[in-house]
Length: 119
Image (cartoon, rainbow, N blue to C red; front, side, top):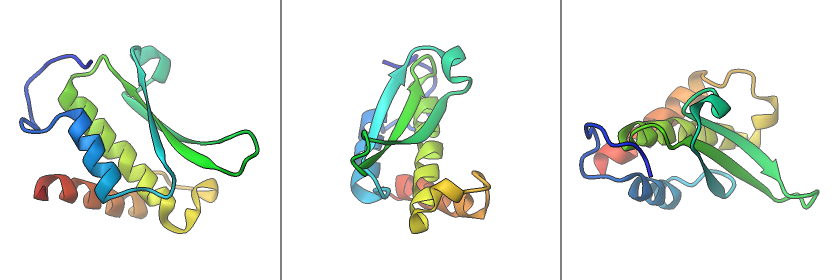
């Protein structure tokens, strides 16, 4: 699915990383991944947003991942986007979030990364 390149995460695939994150560090809402084969469409390697299902009140995080990047970069992108979901899940305050890469994001990023290196 992803382009091949050198392996930073040699023992981990994107699918295994996603499965572990969903199990061990779930955000406030379920997560869906959309695979996009076009960097120009996204403007960057990944994007996360929240979608509500037709007035039902049920929400879901949607993560768009560019498949033109190599698998290692896709894993790094997933880590970054997962940190957004975790930081937005604290107090369920994503609608008023002012600083996407503020202190809460830094703490969440650290938690996600630590989970992956501790196995």
